[in-house]
Length: 484
Image 1 (cartoon, rainbow, N blue to C red):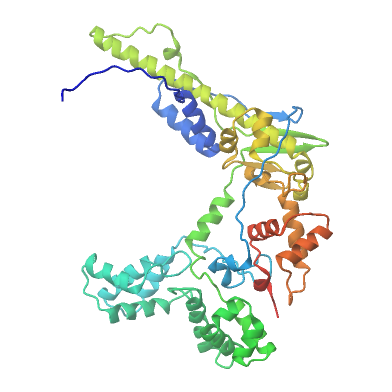
Image 2 (image 1 turned 45 degrees about the vertical axis):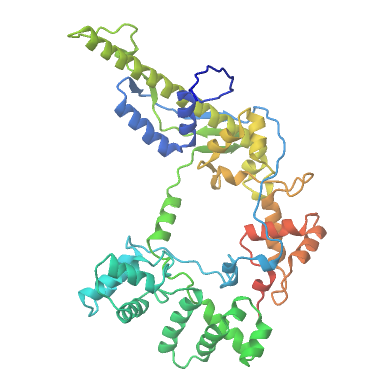
């Protein structure tokens, strides 16, 4: 069969972003410090760009512009019933702002968990072979202090990758030495193991503490009943009185479920949080709001030599002259586009933040979180005329400073629990927390009971919505909130 050539014509609709639009979108996602670094890099790389020294670059605007609003739902994670709660919820109670909550403290030094453990091992009488084995084991301990792989898998790495002829007994011996280090509970395989390591060490120090003995028995033999707060069944299984169980639980509450979290991981997170630089400042002056955008970015312009229409360039040949002219024209166009993208970014941020001020005017005047109104990305998009994706990029990683603190722009976005509701999710969460704080701790309220209480308070929302908000706030289900 002979080949055949043919010519066909078809029409396609294709949309692509211009280089200016791509650069604008990229700059829009940056916060102020990232943008400052990007401008510095561009000034270093593009000779056609130069900075202009101005006394003040800050942008200010009052809340005089008018914007419209609309509504749209945001999605939240949902559990249909209590039995679908993830396994980690069945571990130790972690209800924040309550006596059960354990807050790990960041280490004051820059020492990592691995460095801390190795320094302790180097002070013991261990052979070089054992030290090398310890490096592999410690390398598989996560930031919370737990083993991420089985000892058998690590043994394979030691033998195959490290070329160390280690036996299973040697691996286990080194592992046990690591588990005896500080902080207590390090090197555990799961939460139960972590608590047992800490309890056994405390029992060795406080030999006459009956509550510790009871706690050790509960975690050793009845951890499932304890973690699910089934105290009646626990009492029946152990034969302990309610007072003894209560004393044992108080001892368990003093333990650290994340012994490794006090080191560099937590410290770095707090360090990053303490160095947030606000991208906006909103000040209340009477009944008016004043928006300022602190701008550490200098004004930019085209360098004079590149700005001239006809540049006289000495050249040895016409080809060299053309290459130079092409270079100048390219760099000049890149500088023009960079300056234009910066202006577009600045105007976008100004319009988006002004719209947020309009929607959340009552909050900015009072700094009262209960004054927040339902607001979603679509509301701001319709008010500013931008696409939702543009609004999302403009608010991502950005912060605003008010009279009482610094807030992420994402903090101001919250959905309506119902189409016809004017209550924000923060208002709903606050009320749910208030009801739970005042509930009978021996008989905590189920989600159905919480729904009834919320309806009595004037919030007509479904049980499924109650579950969403409770889970979002990190509040355990009723059986895990039970106290004795």
